[in-house]
Length: 226
Ligand code: DER
Image: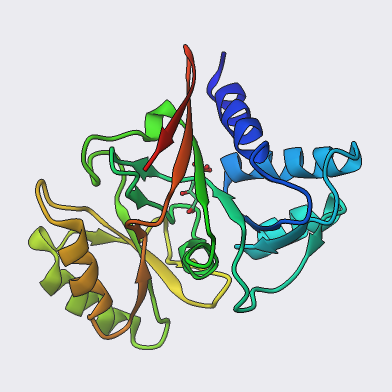
């Protein structure tokens, strides 16, 4: 099966963890899109009732509402379950996320989820974070050139680049820059250093947050539990 079929299969498996009455975090990206569509299908089929969604991006908010889902803004109440994609998944279910530019609202939402269920195809699985993806970093727009200089001083080799011809502007009006990670580093230490850098809003490290992952590979969907 092709990659899209595998992503959809993982999304369908994750959506079957949703029970009626749940408050569900709705992820962002091409894999999470399949989960939002499957959730809407289950509601329309009468398999689920009384579902409230909390979207992690304007794009997911628009998609969910267009499919008839009830979507509310994030408030301090916990979420029963959040379903989202990832750019990298390590053996401890630590993640790199954010290549879709939604990392801040995703982290703000998913930190409140009792269960964070990651859905991905097998190309996202790594032995060590940084092997396949850069680390997206959301930085404040004001004074961003200064912030970039501060970040370059933090990062070995100072490898920081904007994703495209110009910086990506997030739903929050901030910029996203991608950091090439060094060969070896400690994610928790690097996360603390980056978060402590003036002008950095947040990073794509999602450490110790995911509880579950459905990884679709050509030979089937693997379920990983932290
Ligand atoms: O930007 C994000 O955090 C997305 O969830 C990303 O990590 C995964 O997007 P994809 O499912 O389209 O690969």
